[in-house]
Length: 338
Length: 251
Ligand code: SF4
Ligand code: SF4
Image 1: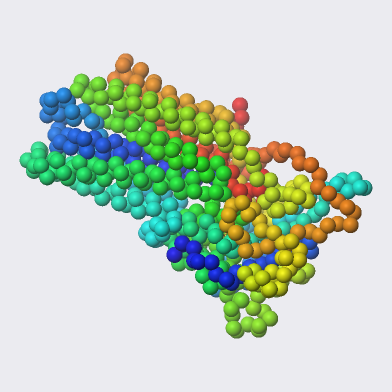
Image 2 (image 1 turned 45 degrees about the horizontal axis):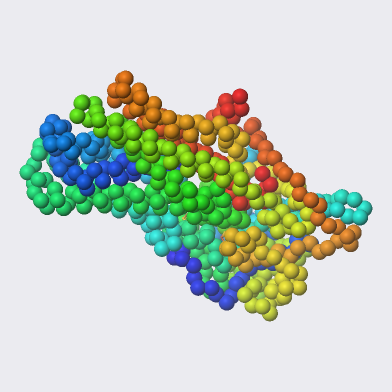
């Protein structure tokens, strides 16, 4: 499949954003008051319960921007972007439609939280956030909704691909698991980079680094298994596609058209398959080693290392996603014998 | 609605005789011509008179060589293979559509795209294993065979002309149109007589169209055993960035 830049951007960027929102939602559900405090009061809180870096307004809005940019990128893939709203109608049968709805619904708790954060910030510790309704009910609930929405949206995205029988590589449960885990991985890298540099945040960043490495391991293991099964999948032969395999080995003698057409451009992509080994090694290495290097380097140079880890890991995700599309063979290519 | 309608007794479709198709592309040209001017047209091409003309065709005619052994030695059988929408009974190209633009008609099973609803997400083209859908770069919407729904029910045409354009145009009568849901229809009888088959049934889409295999040849040919195939990359055809990437990675 042709690796379309808009879709790669969409899945990687919004994946990281949703991963971050997922974590932010959990932080909010467990420590709702963190949202209402600023740094100085947070570090004064007993046990520094609020050392969760994604509940502050800036990082929350950054994650918001990632999700929104990703979704806007996905619109660029459409032939008729202005009609995108129509995609919300067929949730009964279409994963793409379900994804669209999940993405929109997730913006509800996200926007409400952003608004609350903004009000808290402008009014400087308003007392209303400490009222039980907000601290015990509204904020945790919004947090849970945010996490659930992020999870469901990424699950739907992954299912768009894994539900396609025509692309054998994708028609695999590992695809869904990898999308979810890699989104969490991206979110963790993001959260680590967002952790503040003062001492109170230090231990949190270290802890996040270690968790990221622990998530990176199953990520690369899953991808390794995915690539292994990709390599062992038999191709559909031309004879089989045409239905003449019993008559003998079938090969294309003359193409139906002299120039490339939509099908050969969109589905006949070979570059990645030629270089797959190297690119896989690059993706594997970047995803696994970015957080490890980030952690070790962090001991020496401090918070800048987490930004380095985020950059490296994101690059790894881009290569991984590029390969995900570029390496996948579509059934129709058998008719062209490519 | 992109949920599939309950199966209709009427299943309109094509039966294509690979034994007598001569690969003249008349069906493909007639299809392009009719649909460029018909109810679903136009079908504009990009760069039509330039170096790389390309555009949507609902029907593509491949030509294959089939290696066979005969008592006199190896030889190849040439098979021409027109490929278009098979109007499947349970196709994922309909269910994946997020907008309801891609639909299957309950009354006769024809699979169509409502161009006013299509957002051009191309998921349906990804879901079709038979390559029956192409997006129009010019229009931004998905295009596909309509089984000439604007001809077959068209009362302004003579009764004899109420057939798909490809069927009318075929000089060897290799293409037949009819109701494959009716076991007594001429097309169904033809399929039964000649062991007509469906393409890649393992996808579970249940194609309606059938292909009639080449008849056995008199030279007693049989299939020859299968070798492996290598894929090739045509570097000159890649855009600049990818060509550079290919060079770097090839080191
Ligand atoms: S041939 Fe392809 S486009 Fe036509 S109905 Fe079947 S799956 Fe859909
Ligand atoms: S390209 Fe159009 S018809 Fe196809 S799935 Fe998308 S919206 Fe539906």
